[in-house]
Image 1 (tube, rainbow, N blue to C red):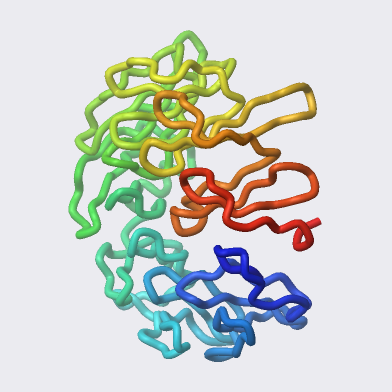
Image 2 (cartoon, helix red, strand yellow):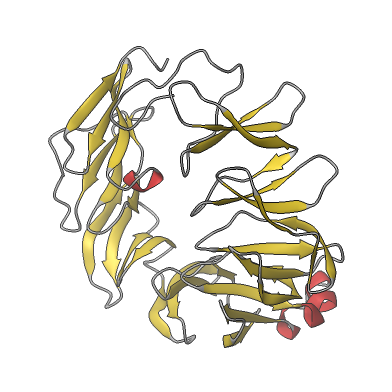
Length: 332
């Protein structure tokens, strides 16, 4: 394991690959298929109990389950903060990872609800479909539509957009759109309709209003940052704003946001070769280098990324594309 300054914390310590470190903790799977938690130090020490199931830490808490026991919320010392055996009087069957401070749980009768990081129920288990939290909102289907949903009767089903307090922001019929992205981002949600048998994409806001009308020139939408979004026109990926103005021509093999005013662009060099680079919203390259591959800065701490300048080396770079460590002997 290495730190983001390139220092090797330890090597040949575990037979199985450690998970990514979050809140100075990581997990390693045992030979028996369970999980153990360790602190991220040069001589990692085991923390907590043996677990059958684990999630990564978010804001100092993680979801775990010891063998034969219900899901619990623990802190970084491995101490149990709350046992999630029952919520709102219903037995819990599973809990998803915390996202944006909230976790979706499922009861034994396949109903979904939401808890906060303290384990308190903020949305009662009354839904047969529930997506994870995105921008403080959840896309859900009330359980009263379960039978119609199973039968594929979309015209009789309504999607509900819920806030983190459980209140309804708005509803829309399930047959209104051909497809809907799972989560809101910056108050916006990509939606898809069919025109002349072809899929076209647009965007609605958190009131259900169309801010980008579905268009034949938008065949897919990637991620959203403020009033800008990446889009696919059938030939390549580019950048557009909600006014419909093209900011970056759709010329990239793929393009995705990596924080404010930074994007990762992937260029196809030939049938088997791709290269990656970082650009700003004006399509100006950040740094002078291109890479065989590059991770998003948002994958780590927002300030560091791992790139592969060639087939023999990985490097850690900062947001201005400065190299702070080369890692020739660690990978491959």
